[in-house]
Image (cartoon, rainbow, N blue to C red; front, side, top):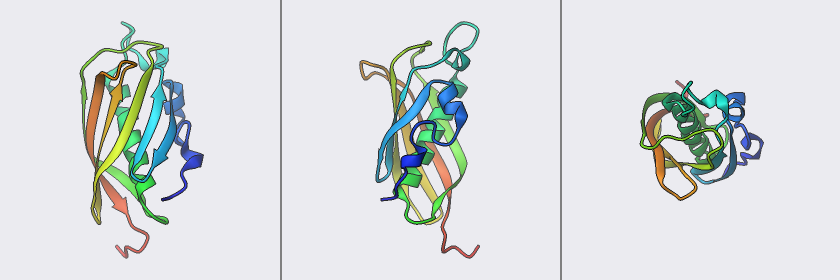
Length: 139
């Protein structure tokens, strides 16, 4: 398993910290994060925007894929992303995020991620397809 410790916290993307999230643990093909939304994450009505959910879910899936790859292999781009929000969340809510690899193929990876509230209820979820860069790939 690759050492991804330097990507804990904002994952190398300052927007993640700005909206109140931070990655806190990972393993072979999975990652977790904590999230307490900031006002920047919310619309004028005080509810976290679906697009902010999508940013964190996409980042969690990318992190999980990279944690499951060897050497200098990495996720190169998000090819497809589907996100659903089921419950509204507001500034300060205590949330968790988990991303997991579903299938790792040669050129693409499939992953899923979910946001849950303090009671474990599903708040939002996402699936995605990601283009991979393989270090030994000559194309």
